[in-house]
Length: 318
Image 1 (cartoon, helix red, strand yellow):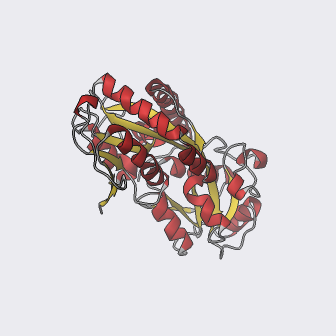
Image 2: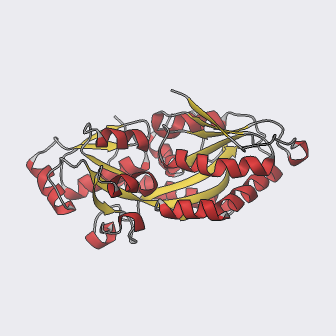
Image 3: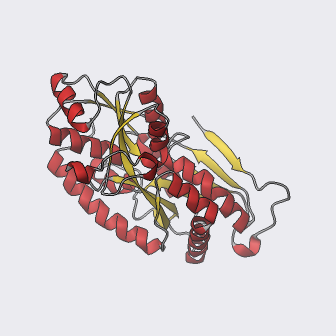
């Protein structure tokens, strides 16, 4: 399913931007269903980018294959910076270890523009699950092997890998069920199709705060303001302590360096805007603005780290 939204500037017309290198509408491809962290961010920074470059910015959702369908589309787009990819960068770091026959290369076919944010994961359950803590969850899962349904954003994505790390460390058998993005996994868990979810705080903490999901813990070592009553993975000494969602913006490899630098500058300005910064903080995110080289460095380290995790855990796509 394709969901498209034109980010409106409000009153007025869109000025020509030929001299700026942008001559037609810019597409931000979100490789997950609407409502997840990547989608939220695309619709948050899109208006700022549109205002800066003087061209319409269109957000398109292209879910599937754990984010790789949308990433492949951008990898094969025109080399002019008019097609962007807003994605959990962990997808690009994990896929080489799980998908040996990938149709694109994250390092050769995509050009990083900039990192956007880091957000920890929230471990949450459907209210009907008879648990109040992680210890309760482990005990319940051991007493009911294979019966707890753990929803995730797609096979092989970062929160799926982290969930597998957790269940392995607990020595429990849970049924891991993939959806087309975090938003779809959240909906399924709220509806009772799933009983447990591990997903980015930016898209999940609000549902915990509203009582639609039962929060159990947050990854990392810092509590999330919106759900500050939840202990951290570090406090609980859980596996996958450092897991979370790293959101980044990329474009097609071969795009002129000047265009990439312009996109990076406008992205960083958008992230520094008070309204954007406050919104990101409110939903549990930590802004990680920087240079394209920062994304390259992060991908190199994370690709190697995930390769080790996947090998040691014996994780394979079924």
